[in-house]
Amino acid sequence: MKMKNIVLCGFMGCGKSTVGALLAKKTGMAFVDLDSYIEKKEKMTVSKIFETGGESYFRSLERQAVEEISLKNGMVLAAGGGTLTFRENVDTLKKNCLIVLLDLPVETVALRLENDTTRPLLHRPDKDQVMRELYEKRLPLYKAAADIVIDADRSPMQVCMDIINNI
Image (tube, rainbow, N blue to C red; front, side, top):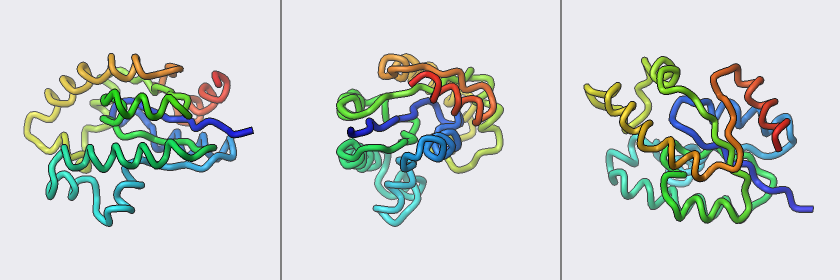
């Protein structure tokens, strides 16, 4: 039997990569962080891709990576924060994946990202306002894409076990 992929989606800082690695270990599946996958292919960081090619170039690379990964089986995928805000990515992933939203209050996101300097969309003086606006815009899209919604405002292991118990 082919095992469906599990895609973790949610806003930046919700724990997709941390929970994804734990979930893969617990289920015996392979773990792929979409941003790392793109960085490896392009031989540069996401920040550098944004800097050199802009967001639209990054999104085209992301779209291509989603297509490639969706053809595989038995994987836990930590999607980028913007990946599932694009209908074509959702449609592609739905064919062979269970989509799990790691839901986190915006206040917790703000605390987790307080000293983060790695996220290109937050490289600005008004980052708190931008983050909150982006969160409000993206959350309904995540919820629309998700097959399962998990409360991610707990320890990564609790979140991981909650996912396992719900699939």
